[in-house]
Image 1 (tube, rainbow, N blue to C red):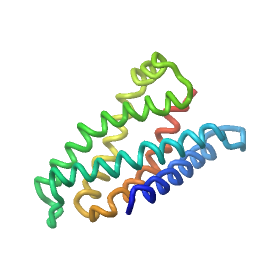
Image 2 (cartoon, rainbow, N blue to C red):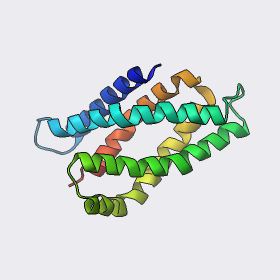
Image 3 (cartoon, one colour):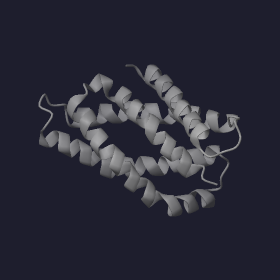
Image 4 (cartoon, one colour):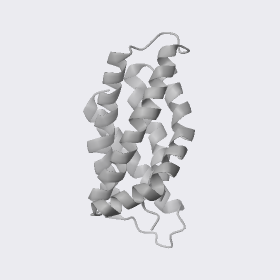
Length: 165
């Protein structure tokens, strides 16, 4: 899939999961937070989809996909993804959404101090197995689509974590 299609898929998925979180959260209001909706759409379209698109091109360029799903290449890619890429991208997510919310850099840093470790531990519980399945069994052309499906659920967690106030 091309980048524009991936970006549109991500914007839609991110908004749907944020709306699902809003509807399941014990919030007495039935209204949708339009600003929050737009922030998550912007995040999915401008940051998440392009990041995944180019990240997987670079990763697969450096370590080409293998026919056999159970190889050291698969394991190395999972380690790179989850223990190098994910910690960096998680900081970027906190910062990007924090800036869009109008938070100060000190406020973003405070939220990272409070929530980063818990977020990464939760991330690894979901994303290590999801990444292993993605790299081992999904053809490269479908990897970002697979990520978008998993990210649908992950974004519910992120929305709760980032909007817990």
